[in-house]
Length: 295
Image 1 (cartoon, rainbow, N blue to C red):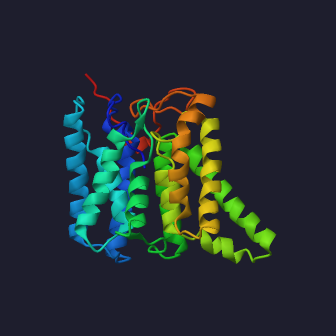
Image 2 (spheres, rainbow, N blue to C red):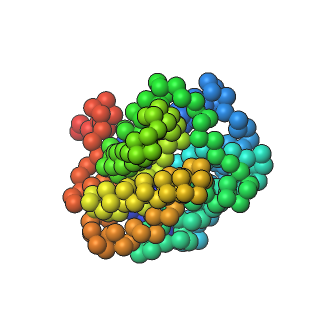
Image 3 (cartoon, rainbow, N blue to C red):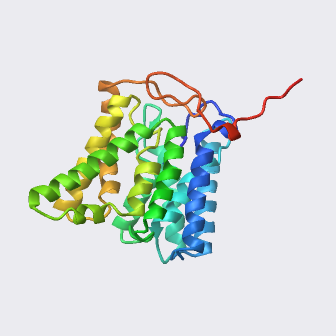
């Protein structure tokens, strides 16, 4: 998920030009749909505790690191993502996941960037500890809902100037799944069934696209997407672990500093989105452009 730097604040963008606003709206829509229509197995208390704990951790870390202002958007994105993907029978575990996610931004860092995607780290640590689980098929396989997720995600990554890593990952991941099926002589219905997952789409559009944990250059992000896809499939088919993309992202995240060194680009700033080569203002639909005040 797109997060802020944690201990070094970028320039503060205007509300309508901040990609995180659209990410929050998208994730909130998905969560409401899951609760009201799909009847997700998550209590209101767990949602409240997850969001509240994330905000408290963000505030405490902001004060501890003497940052100039408290920005709740990053923590809200992480907590909404945890509500969508993490399942547990204990609200204390939900709070722990929020603590892991937010604290990792401030603790695990390299040259001004946090190493791991906060939500991704919590979603790997908590299930690996046996304290919770992830249900990839909780959205079902309804085509129109998958399309909804894709559309909302497309809006987010376009505003955040990170559509390239999402499209590259999906191309590599799906292509390799199909190539494996053809090599084994399996019917194509098998890889098609494997990609019919709301969790995969949310990972692709909302997690691997995080501007603060992906390589700075476009070439670096494409290489990164390939490495994550290869690692995900290796974990999935060699170790027979579910949620391969989450593991693939954790494995490859420490490689980002090396990729940035070999394929350097401009550091991302929420106030001035960049594709790694040049800064450019976020392009928003006409209806959402802020009105100019006429004197």
